[in-house]
Each structure stands twice: as C-alpha cells, then as structure tokens.
Image (cartoon, rainbow, N blue to C red; front, side, top):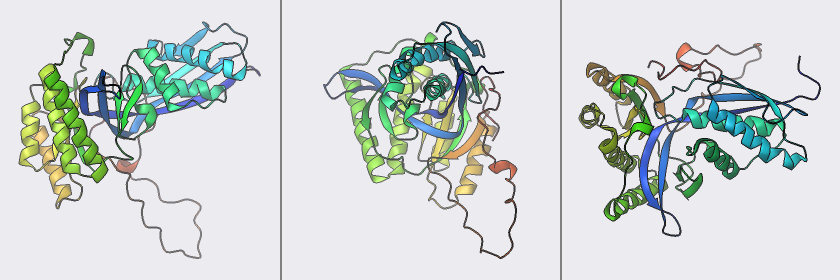
Length: 347
C-alpha cells in the first residue's frame, strides 16, 4: 500500500523513425555543431510512473527495469530540478518504465525513456517543465538526445547540446512512409562507429541541404523534402555502410518514391511516397513486395499527417451505449506494451 505521503506522477514520450537530415551545421554565432531533423512517428512510445517518497534520501531510488541507467540518472536530475521549486528537499522513490520501442534501431528509445521519466517526476511534484529544460536534463542524463520533447514540430536540433538551432515550420509536408529494417533489424552499436570529421566543403553542403529543407517545409514541397532526405541518407552511408542501401534506393526510384530516409545511428529506413499521387495503395503494396523479395524486412506504413476523422453518422432517435469496436488493423499500439528488443511490429 502506498504511504499517505507518497506522490505519484506519470509521463509519456513518443519515438521517431530515424532522420530526414543529419550532419554538422552553423548556429546563430557561426559556430559548428552537430544537428539533426528527425522523422516523427506516432503509435509507439515510452511511459513512466514515478512514486516519490518524501523523507527518504534521494539516492534511495528503485528503477524497473533495473538496466535503465540513463532513465535513473534522468529521474535523479529531475528531482534536483523540481524539489527546490516546491521548496521541498530532494527525496527518493520508485520508478517504473514500460514501452514498445525497439532498442538499437535508431528510433530514439533511450531518449523516449528519459523524457517520459522527466515528465513523470515533474508530474509527481505538480511542476510543468518547459521543453528547453526537459532537453537540458535529457542531455545531462544521456550525453545526447533527440528532440522528442518538442513533439512533432520539425526542428533542426543540436542533439549534443539539447537546443534548437532552427524551427523549420509548424509541420512536415504530407508523406506516406513505407518503413523497413536494414541489416535484418540487428541493432547498430553507434559507439563502435568511427568518429567523423567534416571539412568546410561538407559543412557548406549540409547548410545547402538545410536551406532546401527549410523551403520544403515552408512550401509543403514533399518532393523537395524527399531529395534532402535521400542526400542525407547517402552521406550517412559513408559511415553506416548498409549493404542493402543501394537496393532500397533502387526500389524507390523504380516505384516512384520521392526519396529514402534512414536512421543515421540505427537500422530503420523508409521509402517516402506522395499521398496525393494516383494509385497510392497499389504503390505501397508494390513497395512492400519489392522490399520483401529483396530480403529487406518491411515493418510498418505511417504518415506525417493525422488521419482524417470519419464523417459522423446521420443522427437518429435511437441511442447506443457504445460505438463500434476498433478493427484490428486500426487499433493503436498501447504504450504499456512490453518492449521487444530490436524488433519492429510486422506490417
């Protein structure tokens, strides 16, 4: 039974599907810094519950599962941030994390855990933290983070500093993404990858891609966004060297995709399709068949825009106690679904 003095809070964070653009860019002062623009994806995420125990020492922190060391650091840092705001001493507590984001595929699983934890701890104190504060805590907890605390807004984000370099616009152009997993879905050990250095010419190239992406978002130009994502993916290949990448790009060209995108620190990738193009459903099916026939595991199809709500039925005089049940394919993934290691749900 929870003690009367216990305070419980909950938090949730979504994931992403790799990046649209990643490289080195110039900030407002002209200083170089690593930055990225992620491709948001709804449906999967992390959920955290934190029960704080006033009067216990702050190091008395229980975390389930026990291997979430970054999340545990985030909880301790957030307690230090929130307790003074409530004029209370820091304390310990119990932290429970659940989620369904595959680990090691470049979908932001660790950042999702950390942000869910930060929000849960803040909620237990009745404190609402600004996105910039959440980003600062996340970077302190895991050294680099994705911009998941900003929800789905397209931003160029300095992942090692936890700050926004540029807000590109309110939303991405409409896209349909046919997701897949390269390398058989095996996790990528990003720490084992060699560190990249960029010369002036490469930085200028990234800045040109940044300008093109800014224009694509401002004008809703999905084709231009696809070109930027493809160019960034090809640059990422210089480090990742996925053997199936050329096959993936070839499938996209043959079937009229706008481009390809990849996780620059993982194995997920996607073919970007224009939702307004004729024969979309046939094109999606053709992409899935082509991927599977070439040994590339298709994972899921999603969009960068919310689904159109159904037209409400004509009112009748008869009332029903409940609406129709969800169809199996339309039921959203629950955030408390047990996490599966390095595996995406089947298409």
